[in-house]
Image 1: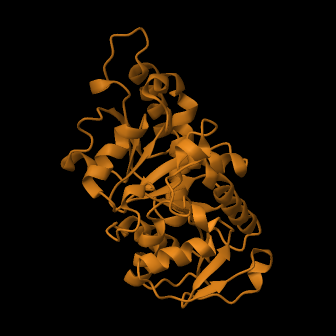
Image 2: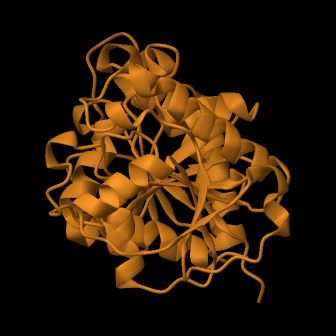
Length: 322
């Protein structure tokens, strides 16, 4: 079996990513060559701070496909970053560096040298500003992908929020039949292609207990008829279910995926159940994008106490894919 490389953008320089990256490499050997897109100066500083002794194999992104890669060294595509700014607080001065990192990765992925991509944590406040809700939307725009979904994946139970990083007051306006169908279809395609099974899905309601006294009850008018339509189209879906009980052990064990109406409705219980044992997969892109389920956590930078499990899970998942 020939393993395509896993392309990694390290992301925000003032984050714990390098720490958990080194811990992941120590924890497990991966068959897929790992190619890191980051600053040489920055990674050397972090290696010194964390007492890491590993050789670096510098790679030219322009003739990437001519390299014979393995994981005996750190395969690095160097993106210039001002060393004097390395350990400042998170700010907009990292934006050019992060942008170059993503641009380099997307060029490689467009060549089909690899279909496997991981990005480290990014500051939404400074890098994305108000243009994108999250990196999911950013990558969808850069790849001209119209239909996409966020899947927080665990082998026992995954969740998909219908809306992602959206203020609660705006959620109800976004709920519609087409959006629900779009997410269910993307989940089904992903499970069939990569996990070789037809997923069983539960869909939550929007309102507490799926009840509302307002003129428009989204659960009755939108969600319930959409579920009926999906069942007729041979999807294994049911609902709408009250979000406060669907995650009870006896309920959740019946499903592969729970589709929720908004971000925290499904991410909060999943993280409570599995903590770091989950990965964020973007469905619908021309490649498989996985993001470890944690943020920059700059307060822990250099302390060598961060948990690498989510990145290990991300690398392990992509390592199984041709």
